[in-house]
Image (tube, rainbow, N blue to C red):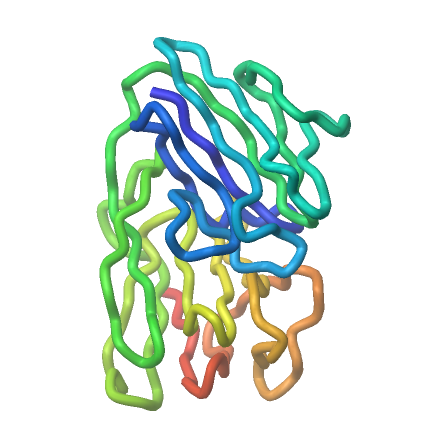
Length: 212
């Protein structure tokens, strides 16, 4: 089954399977793929699926839709194509129907919620790292980082993504004007490596990265 892998600055923030004949992408919350960024139009683009074929169409967006670096109005997507919208890159992957659904944990405004996503990465049998909530309603709760990408923060205010890499974990800002801090130092535009004991403050919530 085809899917879209959304990333920014090399950090994957979400994966969405294309399960409907018509999948919309845009900034407004009613879209199937929501990217809350001013560079993205409210109704930016639509993907039409017919059998195994997927066609991407730009909906007269303000900043345009690009496939492999070229502006398009309507184009059939091929496995491995990269769709560019603003600073976001969306990779089109069509590997068949072998992917399985998993869940990743989201810390949303101090409360821990489960958000369904699709991931081809197998969850580790035991967590090697976790985020411990230090303040707010969920203080004291630990969220194991068992998926490749875990998003933290409050949508519409500030959201960051913690990504597992072969040699450790990195954190990067996904959206929001208020930058998170790592050990009281503002996080820049680049992803930075997390170390055991690092304290992250994001959207008014303090969290600690714990690695075993």
